[in-house]
Length: 361
View 1 (cartoon, rainbow, N blue to C red):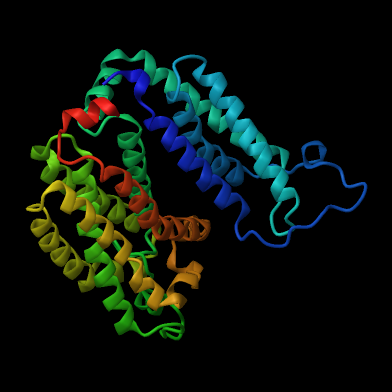
View 2 (cartoon, one colour):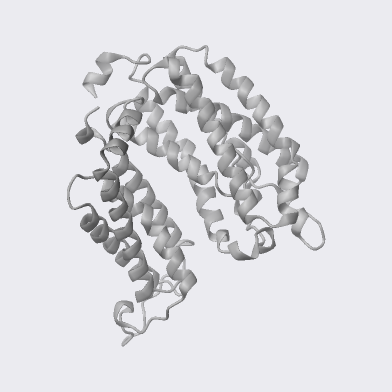
């Protein structure tokens, strides 16, 4: 695959920019025009907070990395400019939202993070062995924009799995985790039995649907099973790392001993095993139906979607992840819809490794 046809970094940059917009403007309420005479935030006196500076720096670093990898020249400069423009737009919008605050130091941290991502992209570009290895890895999957956006969707689904407040491969929250950390040991918003059933159903659908989605991305069907298993194992590893790093000791012990997760894994693998026997057109249809069906369970429990995680669930050093919780839940809810659209375009490819469709792409 030629490098100049690789739009994978650009797809990642676009999706990540949407995440930044969501995280910056949530909850999208209370827009107000500043009082006359109020100085523009860029020229006001800001206050430096080291923790906020670090968070903003690393929040924009991936965006700069993706922008830097999306072209062949001026990687660092391009990343810094696009990062500064995105940060300027977000800070200006936050200036109009009283619950949020716009600050010069946030802008500088965001721009510095994006520029650092561009520097990393430049470093990766000059390392020929690594660059060639990345091209060979990319060549294993569908070519053109269809493969690029499919891989980008898969990467963002994996990133959303790092939210420790959501059970593995699930979309809904688990109220029994709340009971483990709340003082009165009660579940104020949902029946635990219905929640466990919803988790098992969505988990099994997510495992089989994601595995099939990953398998449909590869060119050669011989790599389909291995690709699906690796994606599921990667999500399992990321989830458990996030649990150990961020959850409190009480919530962590409760999470690791849950039976619903193992039941969902077993059912999901059984479904996936059956789906691997299908032809490619049937697999595309079944994958779309499964992923979209996974949205039904959380819709039956809307209180689990609107509930806010208690700060006592997290280790004291990671309470800022409460904001990350809302973002990842939105990604997990919107992801099946985006994947369904992608599968609609994929339906034009009749079988794995179809050379004619690859030439057209």
